[in-house]
Image (tube, rainbow, N blue to C red; front, side, top):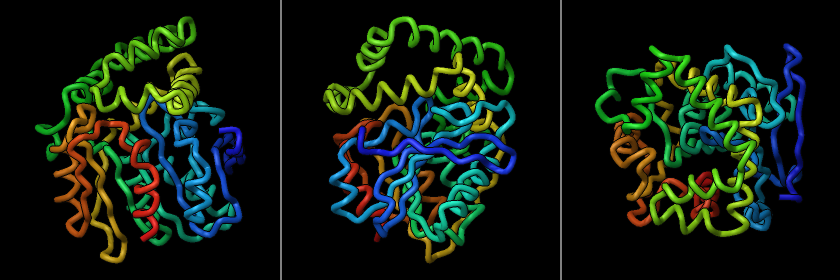
Amino acid sequence: MDDFNDSFIHLRDNRKLSFKSYGEKNENKVIFFHGFGSSASAIHPDIKILDQNNIHLIAVNRPGYGDSTLIDNFTMESVADDINELLNFKGIEKVSVIGYSAGGLFSQVFADKYLEKVISLNLVSSAIPLNSKETRKILPTNWKMISIMNRYLPFMSKAFFGKLSKEITNNLEATLQKSISQMVEEDKRIANDSNIQLVITKGAVEAYHNKGYAVYYDALALCKKITLNPLASNIKVNIWQGGKDTVWTPSTSRYLQEKYTDSTISFLEDEGHLLYLSQWEEILKKSLC
């Protein structure tokens, strides 16, 4: 990860928006939306993949994650505005969008709001709307609980993420190993790679360093009602789903496939939630097509 640049800009309201980037001179522009309780640092560390595919990658931290300013009232739409401001600052007119897990929902909102800037939308183990009659029956159990707590018992959610922050701060290694032990076998295989474990660990540390507030406010944003519209036919939508994923399950990707009628789906039976790391190069290549 030493080859990635840690950067930031000051937004119009003087908040800091931090991001990691590599390959400024490469032609293909790709933006990455990180997962929930992770950060922009949790990306594949092999920069050779980026150079071989002529990719300028930008991974952006949402408010409170990494060095981005912590605020308590952001929405998925306001995050889309932040990303747009960053692209304008860097003079980027067109970009391929990759959204992983909860970042997949943020990426859908961005694509809906700033359609003219999107080359392709790539949803990897992606979230679906949490506060919607359409999705209520297919939300995975953990996300149903998060949705209920944040809508009706937010103090419990805030306390939970605060407790997890203390555990990470006080005993990082034990907390990480406990998390890995609860993964499906397919994800354990990926997470136990030493190089990958480093970026996963850094992602968790940068997510929870603000006493868990960033993750709590992120959850509040995810639980707000949103309306997603079908994208124009010239925007390619690629969906990636692991058959063993228990975080965002195959039923959620089938929902996305119905939502984006011209989408393609890569269903990998023997992959779990971390397929964005094991299939990183293939995901990047497909995002450029």
